[in-house]
Amino acid sequence: MIEVEKLAKDVYNYLHKKWNHPIFSNIARAEATHMNTVGILISRYNLKDPIKTDIPGKYANPEIQKIYNDLSSKGNKSLIDTLKISATVEDLDIKDLEEFISKTDNDDIKIVFQNLNKGSRNHLRAFYSLLKKNGANYKAQFISENQFVKNSK
Image 1 (cartoon, helix red, strand yellow):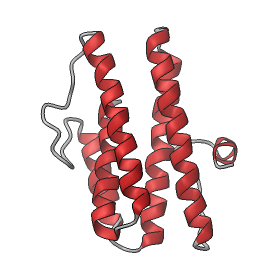
Image 2 (cartoon, one colour; image 1 turned 135 degrees about the horizontal axis):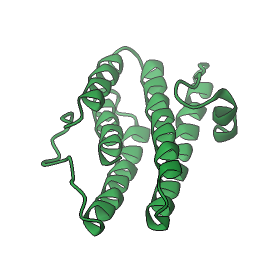
Image 3 (cartoon, helix red, strand yellow; image 1 turned 60 degrees about the horizontal axis):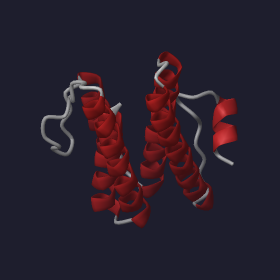
Image 4 (cartoon, one colour; image 1 turned 180 degrees about the horizontal axis):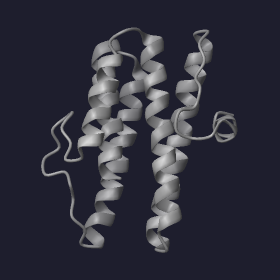
């Protein structure tokens, strides 16, 4: 989960440099906080942290590396594409968090992941709102359409 939060932070920092839109830097800061929160859990439970050094765009998990590469390259096309990419990151984050929540019986971890999920839903709403203001739309890729509709209000 820490690499998923890092993925979001890195993608948004990359997109902020490219498009200079404040939504990306604001949400990247929130994602950094999410990383720190997951890091506390990793430390508390003596788990292995896959992030040796926080180098932007570098991941231990090859699947996450591929997602970063794909998303950052797609973010060069247009602001609309970039907002859709950002919604996709949050869509994926919500799916992953819900999966992790369903697989743990540790209340400490559940509470942290539920709070991270709430943050991702807020981020998804923010990106979706900007897409609508720019005459565009977003279709959920990882969560169900019903869940997306519920989360985007």
